[in-house]
Length: 296
Ligand SMILES: Nc1ncnc2c1ncn2[C@@H]1O[C@H](COP(=O)(O)OP(=O)(O)OP(=O)(O)O)[C@@H](O)[C@H]1O
Ligand SMILES: [Mg+2]
Image (cartoon, rainbow, N blue to C red; front, top):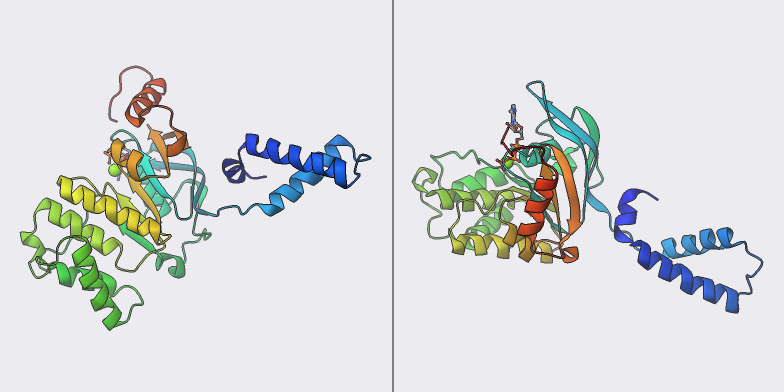
């Protein structure tokens, strides 16, 4: 059984199921002659075949990366399931953006494999299904918001009429409908963040990567991003976002992981948290830091 299957079926659940099937087998199917090991193996197979295993939208195995001769990522393993909202946490310089870039094929892993939507080669077909909002969105300042979305939409196979409809819908969603004809050069920081988010969903992606989507936004903007993420989730879109805002992770994520100094410290379900995420985060970072914490 590979490790991501083990993630979705807890050992406790498995033991209970085995016990139930065992009782039935003994009582009704007169299978007493089975050796206990054979029985468990048989029962486990029946049980496994009845379970729908969620497929990972992203599966990272043993990812290591060096930049400028320095190791940035150390043997990172991570799986994010389809339809999940996943928050990637870690102090400044921990390796969040580097991991995201590696997943998106913007940098090449030195070791390890990455599968996204079941594809390890990142084909054009897969790229069509991905949305990405980078940390520092490079924007063509002499385009208007509307033109910028149109420009980005043209990279995808969307008909002109559908694209125009999507542009209007997205401008409304990100609260820029009135500012749609203003040059990006005249947008505020938060407005640029909003239009960057808009371009990430122009292709109606199956999976969207957002690198700190809430940074620089006012409380209304933050709520808008959270609502948008939840709306994407409701449509079955997988959302992977890097963030420092722990309360957002608690309120909208299904799962999260913490990376520190290039090492994956933990990967968990939000519902399994037994204490506030802030306390848990600090504790995990302290446990995994030798000496004084410095950004390197
Ligand atoms: N192009 C680069 N060349 C050399 N080192 C780099 C490069 N990009 C990032 N790094 C280093 O990689 C490490 C991880 O950086 P990364 O941007 O992935 O961190 P992060 O977790 O996204 O941090 P933040 O929360 O500040 O965005 C840092 O030590 C950084 O200095
Ligand atoms: Mg970053």
